[in-house]
Image: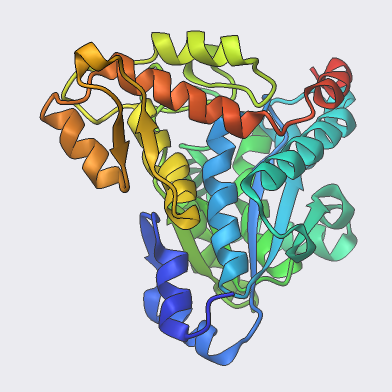
Length: 337
């Protein structure tokens, strides 16, 4: 565990996009030895390896002395289109998949608690506060807050508009100090900071990570098979998907480089290991890198070819996924999907 307040602060801030507000986070670290952070995910499509990024960040929170609550938001999943008939099975799948991903990352699971959304979100006091907050916000307010997270369209479902109200209240009812989420949730997180004090609750610190681009396209999405690698994918599946991924020579703005930066190289650096790109002697032999910046410089200078990079990244991903119990997940997946 990291000792000083500044070390803890820097570890939490590592690879994040924004902290609202930094002075509040520092104050929290000074005043509380074991604060609580929560990260939530609605149970929708199958979790991809993109989940390794936030879970790795949660491991940083643990190292910084935090207790972690993982909210598996079954009701949020239903509000975002998951059939009610499979909610329980989706919850089971998500819990097992995330547990296994934590394990392959080497996280301390003793500091991680899973919480099922419906276990507290159906209580009378929670429902009362949902209605109270709903009376203080317009359809436009809720639509704007949820726009980047919930499927909207021209005539959005009422459930999607309730989504940001519930996510705001989750901070209070989970009794946390910090909410951690992707930058795509920024509007909901700011909605929470604005609205919780209106009903007598404290605003929390909000920590956001950047969004990892998809293998094809701008966002790695659990609903787009081409843009993601599932945790149950075989070594061959990983090779094929990485091989087809967008990765233009000299341009580091792609999903392959992003995953390398935010997951693979964080793990390598923390373990004191180098990232090895295997090449035939006639192409100059193997390359070894100690940092992501070194890899990016070589890639931009076109000293590192996309195909060589892809082979090395695919190998690293498969090594990570080798610790996943695929059969167990596939069995749960039969009922969930």
